[in-house]
Length: 148
Image (cartoon, rainbow, N blue to C red; front, side, top):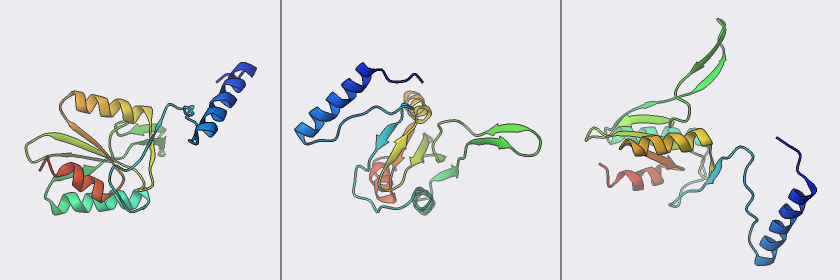
Protein backbone atom coordinates (compact mmCIF):
# COMPACT_ATOMS: atom_id res chain seq x y z
CA UNK A 1 0.00 0.00 0.00
CA UNK A 2 1.33 3.42 -0.94
CA UNK A 3 1.25 6.47 1.24
CA UNK A 4 -1.59 8.89 0.48
CA UNK A 5 -0.51 11.97 -1.43
CA UNK A 6 -1.51 15.51 -0.51
CA UNK A 7 -4.11 15.35 -3.28
CA UNK A 8 -5.57 12.13 -1.81
CA UNK A 9 -5.81 13.73 1.63
CA UNK A 10 -7.54 16.79 0.22
CA UNK A 11 -10.00 14.64 -1.72
CA UNK A 12 -10.75 12.66 1.47
CA UNK A 13 -11.29 15.90 3.41
CA UNK A 14 -13.64 17.16 0.68
CA UNK A 15 -15.73 13.96 0.82
CA UNK A 16 -15.96 14.27 4.61
CA UNK A 17 -16.93 17.95 4.36
CA UNK A 18 -19.65 17.28 1.76
CA UNK A 19 -21.09 14.44 3.86
CA UNK A 20 -21.10 16.57 7.03
CA UNK A 21 -22.80 19.38 5.12
CA UNK A 22 -25.48 16.94 3.91
CA UNK A 23 -25.86 15.46 7.41
CA UNK A 24 -24.77 11.92 6.46
CA UNK A 25 -21.76 9.77 7.16
CA UNK A 26 -18.98 9.92 4.56
CA UNK A 27 -18.57 6.88 2.32
CA UNK A 28 -15.04 5.61 2.63
CA UNK A 29 -13.94 2.48 0.79
CA UNK A 30 -12.22 -0.12 2.95
CA UNK A 31 -8.59 -1.02 2.41
CA UNK A 32 -9.36 -4.73 2.08
CA UNK A 33 -12.37 -4.36 -0.25
CA UNK A 34 -14.89 -5.79 2.23
CA UNK A 35 -18.42 -4.44 2.33
CA UNK A 36 -20.48 -3.64 5.44
CA UNK A 37 -23.58 -5.74 6.11
CA UNK A 38 -26.78 -4.92 7.96
CA UNK A 39 -29.88 -6.99 8.82
CA UNK A 40 -32.85 -6.77 6.42
CA UNK A 41 -35.39 -7.57 9.16
CA UNK A 42 -35.30 -6.66 12.88
CA UNK A 43 -33.02 -9.09 14.76
CA UNK A 44 -31.55 -9.39 18.23
CA UNK A 45 -28.04 -7.96 18.60
CA UNK A 46 -26.36 -11.32 19.28
CA UNK A 47 -22.71 -12.22 18.69
CA UNK A 48 -21.93 -14.24 15.56
CA UNK A 49 -21.34 -17.51 17.43
CA UNK A 50 -24.81 -17.35 18.98
CA UNK A 51 -26.42 -16.40 15.64
CA UNK A 52 -24.72 -19.45 14.09
CA UNK A 53 -25.95 -21.76 16.88
CA UNK A 54 -29.54 -20.47 16.62
CA UNK A 55 -29.53 -20.82 12.82
CA UNK A 56 -28.34 -24.42 13.09
CA UNK A 57 -31.08 -25.16 15.65
CA UNK A 58 -33.69 -23.64 13.31
CA UNK A 59 -32.46 -25.75 10.37
CA UNK A 60 -32.47 -28.90 12.52
CA UNK A 61 -36.02 -28.15 13.74
CA UNK A 62 -37.15 -27.82 10.10
CA UNK A 63 -35.30 -31.04 9.13
CA UNK A 64 -33.04 -29.35 6.59
CA UNK A 65 -29.79 -31.21 5.94
CA UNK A 66 -26.78 -29.06 6.77
CA UNK A 67 -23.25 -29.09 8.19
CA UNK A 68 -21.04 -26.53 9.88
CA UNK A 69 -18.23 -25.34 7.64
CA UNK A 70 -14.98 -23.92 8.94
CA UNK A 71 -11.95 -22.56 7.13
CA UNK A 72 -8.51 -21.65 8.37
CA UNK A 73 -4.79 -22.23 8.31
CA UNK A 74 -2.02 -22.91 10.76
CA UNK A 75 0.79 -25.11 11.95
CA UNK A 76 -0.79 -28.27 13.36
CA UNK A 77 2.42 -30.03 14.34
CA UNK A 78 3.25 -31.48 10.92
CA UNK A 79 3.87 -28.23 9.08
CA UNK A 80 1.67 -25.47 7.78
CA UNK A 81 -1.76 -26.56 6.51
CA UNK A 82 -4.87 -24.93 5.07
CA UNK A 83 -8.35 -26.42 5.47
CA UNK A 84 -11.87 -25.59 4.28
CA UNK A 85 -13.20 -23.65 1.31
CA UNK A 86 -12.14 -20.00 1.33
CA UNK A 87 -15.18 -17.71 1.29
CA UNK A 88 -17.72 -20.49 1.84
CA UNK A 89 -20.63 -19.91 4.21
CA UNK A 90 -20.58 -20.93 7.87
CA UNK A 91 -23.35 -23.46 7.14
CA UNK A 92 -23.53 -25.60 3.99
CA UNK A 93 -26.46 -27.82 3.14
CA UNK A 94 -29.07 -29.12 0.73
CA UNK A 95 -32.64 -27.83 0.56
CA UNK A 96 -35.52 -30.35 0.39
CA UNK A 97 -35.67 -30.07 -3.43
CA UNK A 98 -31.96 -30.91 -3.75
CA UNK A 99 -30.72 -27.34 -4.18
CA UNK A 100 -27.34 -26.43 -2.64
CA UNK A 101 -27.31 -23.62 -0.06
CA UNK A 102 -24.77 -21.76 2.04
CA UNK A 103 -25.43 -19.41 4.94
CA UNK A 104 -22.89 -16.82 6.07
CA UNK A 105 -23.71 -15.64 9.58
CA UNK A 106 -22.78 -12.23 10.96
CA UNK A 107 -23.34 -10.60 14.34
CA UNK A 108 -26.81 -9.12 14.87
CA UNK A 109 -25.56 -5.54 14.69
CA UNK A 110 -23.89 -6.18 11.31
CA UNK A 111 -20.47 -7.13 10.03
CA UNK A 112 -18.30 -7.14 6.94
CA UNK A 113 -18.41 -9.44 3.91
CA UNK A 114 -14.88 -10.13 2.66
CA UNK A 115 -13.89 -10.19 -1.01
CA UNK A 116 -13.57 -14.00 -0.88
CA UNK A 117 -17.10 -14.25 0.55
CA UNK A 118 -18.44 -11.87 -2.11
CA UNK A 119 -16.81 -13.99 -4.85
CA UNK A 120 -18.13 -17.23 -3.33
CA UNK A 121 -21.64 -15.72 -3.11
CA UNK A 122 -21.55 -14.82 -6.81
CA UNK A 123 -20.19 -18.28 -7.76
CA UNK A 124 -22.82 -20.20 -5.76
CA UNK A 125 -25.69 -18.05 -7.03
CA UNK A 126 -24.34 -18.26 -10.59
CA UNK A 127 -24.38 -22.05 -10.40
CA UNK A 128 -28.03 -22.07 -9.28
CA UNK A 129 -27.41 -22.41 -5.56
CA UNK A 130 -28.57 -20.23 -2.69
CA UNK A 131 -26.17 -18.10 -0.61
CA UNK A 132 -27.70 -16.21 2.33
CA UNK A 133 -26.17 -13.60 4.55
CA UNK A 134 -28.01 -13.59 7.91
CA UNK A 135 -27.67 -11.60 11.13
CA UNK A 136 -30.18 -13.59 13.16
CA UNK A 137 -32.56 -16.52 13.07
CA UNK A 138 -35.43 -14.12 12.26
CA UNK A 139 -33.69 -13.15 9.03
CA UNK A 140 -33.02 -16.82 8.19
CA UNK A 141 -36.69 -17.72 8.70
CA UNK A 142 -37.75 -14.82 6.46
CA UNK A 143 -35.38 -15.87 3.67
CA UNK A 144 -36.15 -19.60 3.89
CA UNK A 145 -39.95 -19.35 3.96
CA UNK A 146 -40.21 -19.24 0.16
CA UNK A 147 -37.71 -22.10 -0.32
CA UNK A 148 -39.14 -24.76 2.03
